[in-house]
Image 1 (spheres, rainbow, N blue to C red):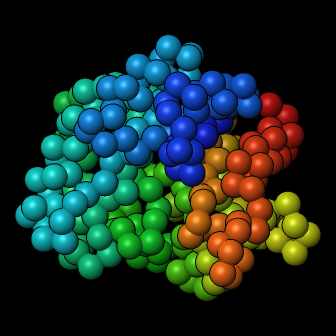
Image 2 (cartoon, helix red, strand yellow):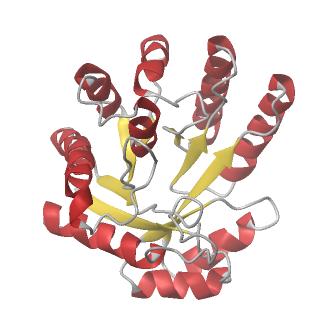
Length: 268
């Protein structure tokens, strides 16, 4: 099974797509995960392909009004799928939409996937339908075809714990997680200050074991590949010093560390 590592465009927006593609390629990534607006998607796709990089595109909803949100989401999914990315990573719904409304958006994504042939995964994320481990369970029971992007750092933050008391919930999520965002969260935030620091060793190991379990499941299923985005973000995810707003660590260096750490852990 191939393991492909992706770099987010998040935090590199000061660079043009050609500039960032060269930097990402030189750093040893296999591709990029990009939230590109309608006016930038074609360029993003072309530049990544010109540089031999795989591309994951992101989708979002819009309005807090459900009907408007649904229309914008549907339009966005079809427009993104037309570019034939490796897959679409979707931040789907809202935590304040009803269960049935969020389920309607999930079904909509499945319909788009069936019609376009482009896989759509739903990211576990605060503020979305997938904001917590226990909150996810009803959706998994109701929609067995639901597939996830595993960003469990959000669930750690929401639960204010490392989810040690939610083993069954985590096992059910791991069973349907097909893409990893390897950001490390902690009980009071979705991102530790620096995963290289010894005080965060246990947090890193806890998350890595969840990622190990996803990888093992895919290997046993003879899946062709595992995709991993090294997604530590810039401010305000990355803590900064007061007044100066100086980041306490380098986002770029942290993401490189996460890539190299998992490559070494998995022997890839």
